[in-house]
Image (cartoon, rainbow, N blue to C red; front, side, top):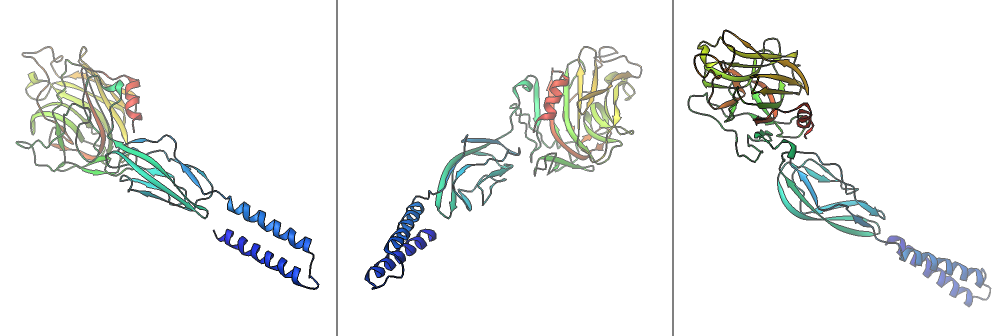
Amino acid sequence: MKTKFLLILFYLTIVSATSDCFKAERPPFSVKSTQGLAVSAIKLLMSASTIAAPTINYMNSPFTFTKNVPIQAISPAVTGSITSCSISPSLPAGLSINSTDCVLSGTPTALQSNTTYTVTASGKDGSASATISISVNPKVVPASLSAGLYAWYPLDGNTDDLSGNANHGYSPGGIWPATSGPVYISGRKGVANDAASFNGTDQFFASNFAPRCEQDFTIAMWVYPVSVANNGILGTQVSPGSDPGAAIKIDAAGKVQFIAYWIASGFNTDGISGSSTNALSPNTWTHIAYVHDGVSRQGNIWVNGVSGGTTANFGAFAGCTTGTGSNMWHMGTPMNIGYSYNQTYYNGSMDDIWFFQNRKLTAGEIATLMGLP
């Protein structure tokens, strides 16, 4: 608008000068040249009057995002010059709009139903607006992993099960030590409240997952151990300090260990055990999994997508199908996560815990788990 005003003022000055020239006895310059200046001013004025206001458009709206998953930056298509941007109403928590180029970015940290927003872009030649729609949904289980899934605990600020089976985590109470549960921190992706932290003294939670030695099952998760020696991760047992069942821990050598004790042994001297080939590094996110075969009654330990460690029987009894009784390993719930036999608490963080019943994950499926956001 300022440019148009100056051109109009210039044009009026030229016209005034032309008029004076006609009145003067001796014009300071020719009428022809003066008219030429006037025509040029008119052309400039016409050009200025046709300067277009900016336009803005976002392709592919509506946008559907996933809670606690970073979005790829979304840039609008813009014509003309813009100097500032605003949006109304406020974006979902964790998302933002760049105030100069209108680019949307961030990581949504709260769920939201589909909502319409108006983006306003302003520049020296005017303003323009665009409407977009945004929804933020919870994480979903990939279709390839739905079969046999008992529970999935993303640990995004709570111990809710997002498998769709409602096997939510809980504080066990009763005979079990008092606990307030884990606290929630930034996880592998640097997103707030995206992983659970356990202090190694009194923090854990429980699940009703009950693995059996004569059935296929898989346990998988990300761990970030502060201590890599004798650090309990999870396990079942009949009561604190006695009758331990299946457990995953970090052994004295810093290796991932699966261990369970047969009921028939009576003194925790017989069972099944195996450790990973390599030790874990402290303060490092590592993906671990245990895949159990119900036919052989043995399993494999996986570290960062590589199978490296096989279980074997120890003690006098050959396995869960022999002995004086049913000779299962000790059963019952809860499966304590962050606490295991013998009253060992986990010191470190965990993320994305998966429990599968009657299913042995393959190398490719474990890789799929590892690749999830």
